[in-house]
Length: 392
Ligand SMILES: [Fe+2]
Image 1 (cartoon, helix red, strand yellow):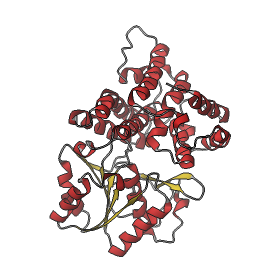
Image 2 (image 1 turned 90 degrees about the vertical axis):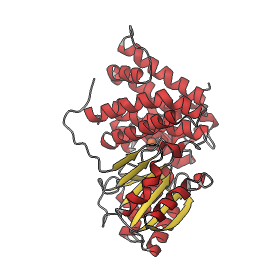
Image 3 (image 1 turned 180 degrees about the vertical axis):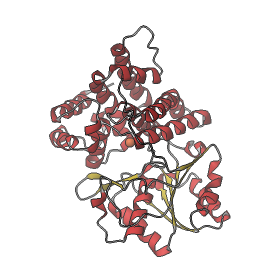
Image 4 (image 1 turned 90 degrees about the horizontal axis):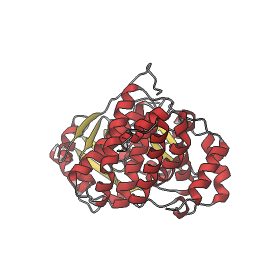
């Protein structure tokens, strides 16, 4: 069972976790600034969540301006508009409220506020140096999936060439505080709960099995896989179950911490290329490819995938590591079916004629190098085609 025993582990985000924690947002933000650019998701507009945060800011004497025009798979234009608002307001702190799109828009806008409106921020992909450090960011996630509240990157889609860019510069973009209140996820609709939860499961599974895994990341990822697999069906089917929502948020947090210090694999290579090309929601794309990539990968390390099986709730007593690994793959397919995840063929605009080009771009994706089993263009085409031909 492979893991790297020479490693670094970094974590710079203060975590405030628990039901009702949203009330502490103002106090946490005021420790870093008094003029906040607040960036929030349109999807939570009628839930009362944003009002709770704004009220808490006001109570702590924090003035704010509010950008609420975040799009799914955020583009440059939205980031630039949010940054412009923050710059005009003279913001000294940035607050992101919502799912990954809102938090990533907040983080990327923050980089633009600090580094000037004309900077060519696309060149900062792959961990380059920003001219200046961004302002402090505080994140309030309202889904359990992305991990953006504690990761050091912001994923933005370039509208011109349909490619997702990960904006990062070491830990400087990592939020200062994550306000993690499971009650904020109660209104998340079932399919979003399911797909963002499968994204979180993918973070944990890929962090655990990829070539950059370390013992600390392994421990976090194993907890995350157990927490998510044990609660995702309940959280999806009975969204008001706060215990299930709490476990999902814990799993998302710990999966995020794991992959922020380990890495990801070919599921994310596929989902980011598919998301950039077809605008497919990130969680849906990950859900679809997780069973296929895991099926492809298990032979690279049956022992580790047998532990994955155990973390997914499979009784591996009497099974060989290979048999347990195969059960893990079966379980992932079954979870998608039970959670109502659409098949690849049902995803908008998907066309097999594009698979050659998508597979080409997957080969050069940064996550591919960390996949536990080498995968080439033919391997990606086979996974794309198999997923396309599959029905429940
Ligand atoms: Fe992800």
